[in-house]
Length: 244
Image (cartoon, rainbow, N blue to C red):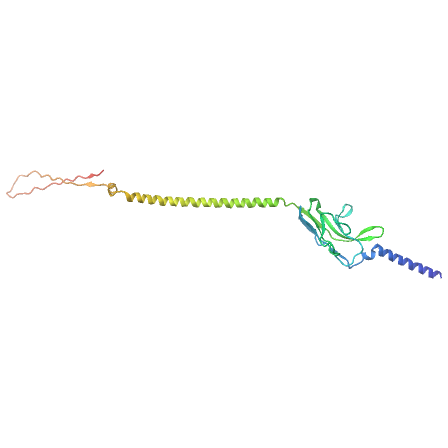
């Protein structure tokens, strides 16, 4: 009879131990079917923009919430808790999903930079929530692009001014050369017109004129040596006078 009582006591202790393990979640912790994925290694977001953090699960996990934490250890900050209302800037992308725990963080502040972890917790009797499985972490960095639009605007304005200056310079250069060509053509036409309107006397007055005349003077008579009459040879004189 004593050995039967001892066997019954051992069986009872085994059942109590099994129930305790089930309540503590040890059996769920060794469940190989549950998987958690946090695919993003690094994310860069602009100040004032929206940050998207991705986390999905598969398989049956232990009882307990899925959370987003910023940082680990004693200085961590809970960003999202499945069992609690989200903060004003945090929204769940798939609110009713049991496998997609991706979130949006709107109106990002500079202090939002850091490393974020998606973590599946399990409930432990008497100890609350303990980490069951966690993601590898997503490093979030911020950059300020407030100066980028103004810089682009300045560059665009400078390029437009440069193009406008080149167009004006080319236009003035072309007008200048066209004016010179027109002036030369006009001067030639005026000169031809003035030349054509001059009287023929004025044109001929530019050429030197010569006056020719001859004066005949008889030579003195030579003594006659014969009876045959001899004609007097005339003498010619030529005077050239240039016309004024």
